[in-house]
Image 1 (cartoon, rainbow, N blue to C red):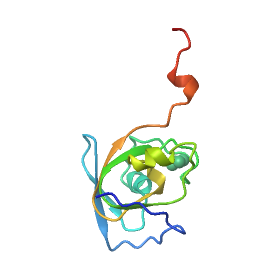
Image 2: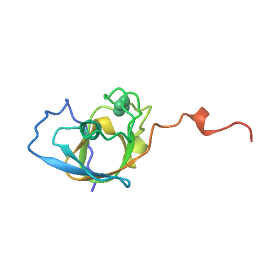
Image 3: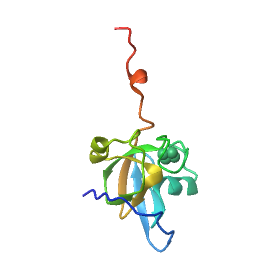
Image 4: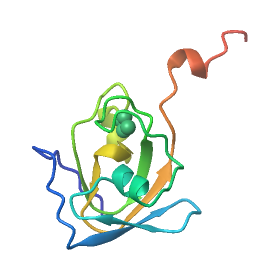
Amino acid sequence: MKQTAMVADTPSHECSIQYSVFCDDNLPFTCRSGESVLAAMERHNLKPIKVGCRGGGCGVCRVKVTSGNYLVGSISRAHVSVEEQAEGYELACQVYPQGDLQIAFCGPKKKVSETTSGED
Ligand code: FES
């Protein structure tokens, strides 16, 4: 069951607990307690997600969490709305697993001008 809650501050980087993150068809990777999913991917030299601001502001690391418990840090609502977040969309740089997670890569949210051609 998904659990989301805003974290007040950047979590500490305790390394005693590790969780597995399963993503699409890739091999799972480990994420340390207090480490974001994006930081864990960078630590493992995995590059299926673009890395931008690392602070929840640019939206390039958008993923969909399909199962697992996690906490989220501060994110820009321009990139993940409340409704989208309720469906599991998150920014990987602000997802802190509290157990094993299953995620899917989404890429940045498309702007309205990018989703319609206007030539119908
Ligand atoms: S890297 Fe910018 S929102 Fe995640």
